[in-house]
Length: 212
Ligand SMILES: Nc1nc2c(c(=O)[nH]1)N[C@H]1C(S)=C(S)[C@@H](COP(=O)(O)O)O[C@H]1N2
Ligand SMILES: [Mo]
Image 1 (spheres, rainbow, N blue to C red):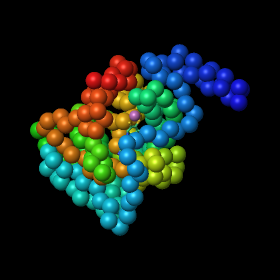
Image 2: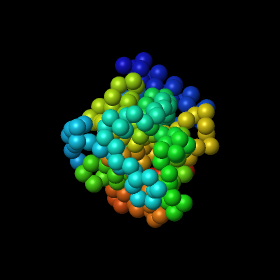
Image 3: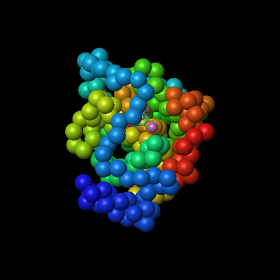
């Protein structure tokens, strides 16, 4: 136990020195679970996913159709506003960027913000450029396994840092909605659940934008 604690401390120091640990964060080897309310159940026969709002190509996809979209695997450092960071997490899912590049999704010039809508009315918001960056994923798998119910099954938004691409804007993990059901493209910003509860609207981990 003492050994593993000092190992964690050593790793934490290492990540701080190489610049992968944002200010005020500490390293965890666990994967804590955070959300408001209960874990929703789902039926993949009835589940659907929508891309809607300021798009030329509104889409409503079944679970099968959604999973036939081109998928990507990425490794992310996750940073939670409650001060834990988890490094090198492996995710698989769909990048909005890829859908746009392949003309599967055509966004109107009027779209400036993206709102993630999850089960039970939970939402979170960020600028369009963040949704289109390679560090935002509509994730179906974590560590090679389907995402577990507590972490957002069957689909969640996830955003984190890609250490090799430090210029990407990295937001705190609450900007990824668990139990995600649609993406709304909007000309105006619409602060979501935690944003209205006092979290910072922008949530840049390097600027320590925790509370608004
Ligand atoms: N649907 C939904 N998604 C959510 C939340 C929530 O309350 N509901 N909480 C957010 C917060 S505050 C955090 S820190 C992360 C936690 O993700 P995890 O439980 O997989 O660690 O989920 C985010 N996504
Ligand atoms: Mo959070």
